[in-house]
Amino acid sequence: MVDVSLSFPIKREAPVKEWSPSIHYAQFQRMATGALPQRRLYDFELLYVCQGAAVTTMYGNTYSIEAGQLIFLPSGVYHQNEVVSHPDARFLGIHFDFYDELDIQTEADMIVNEAVLDVNKLAHEAVSPAFPPLSSRVIYTPPLSCVQMMERIVEDFTLRPAGYELACKGLMLDVLVQLFRTHSSQSLMETSPHNARLIELMTQIEQAPAKDWSNRVIAEQLMLSADHTAKLFKRFAGMPPSEFVQSVRHREARRLLRESDISIEAVGERVGYPDIHYFSRIFRRLEGITATDYRKLSRIL
Image (cartoon, rainbow, N blue to C red; front, top):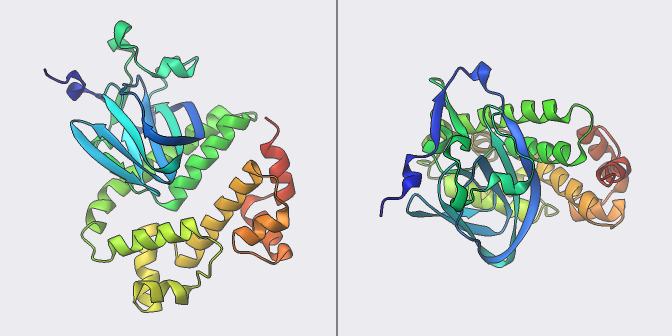
């Protein structure tokens, strides 16, 4: 039996200036160990693994996805996701289309009901001479700046302040550009003998941000000089080691402020800033508001 999903996604070439991505869903989600039903989407999904590990069966292949990686799930393509880490995994999921062509009222509108498939509703993948199609690669390792933009999409889509649709559209365009650039750069980095060690080290930083991650410690972990480490790290992550560590800590602090009731001081300690005054200064400089105000704002809805 021929897999009809092999003819999808349907591509539509258009200048980048005509792209107008619309966000249909953007949330953090935690899934227990186990397989989900096979499905197809009317739109597209970026599924980023925050914690844990998963596998996706698609195009007749099985793809492993670890923390720090993202899988692109195209419109019209059969796929099945499975969480393989115990007891669960944490994801950031964004559903979108490239041309603002779908009318999505509920989450169910994004998933194909095979009994009443409407082929005309399947979203088109935007292609341009400037970039290879996003679907030409399945797994991406997005730079931290890209992950941060996806997190901001989730925040704006959840809180829905005035102008959030326009803000999400702009952020999504930036995310797409980052992924297209990553497409070409990853092919080169995959041949680097230091690639695997860098990924492993970045994962360790993500999992234990409060540890001592000075430039010296990071260089020792890679068994390289501090200068060489800084160059490799910046080429791979898009920023120096110290900035990466600070970004990871800030992201974890924001998560703890959103999802827990522990004190501001305890949040600082958990992410590597035992001095509450220093943590408060760093947080306000990076976020633009105090940690207390951020917690209040995140709980409006």
